[in-house]
Length: 167
Image (cartoon, rainbow, N blue to C red; front, side, top):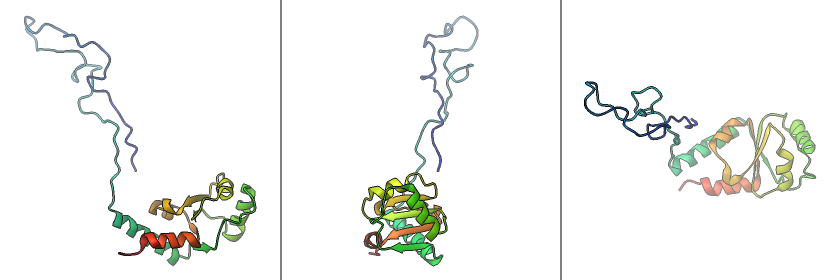
């Protein structure tokens, strides 16, 4: 993933006058225009980098296949944990969620996929570096491969099955 933020100034963006630097004829030297031309010191850059988007679009079917393969890999490596629901979290305290993760799931980096918005769960996980909460619609291959464990609600699995079922 490249940033694409590098930029240089062209001759139109360099500060300076557009006045002709020397007369066209009568000096016995080469013709010169303005001092912002690329061959002059502190002139503009001829074909320098400009900010651009380096991303490429993948076909929808390829994206879905990638998700299927990543989910299958998590299941095969025994890194997929299915829970009935996470809606019954007692409080929005980070301490409570951290305690659950450390005791039950050995404190490894965890991606939690939920089906419905749960404000308490999102508040509790917001300050944990080893846990991220995403909605089922936001699931992507990069997140699945970045995190060690995948904790997913049963309803979220049903939603993913509907989206990823082969046509």
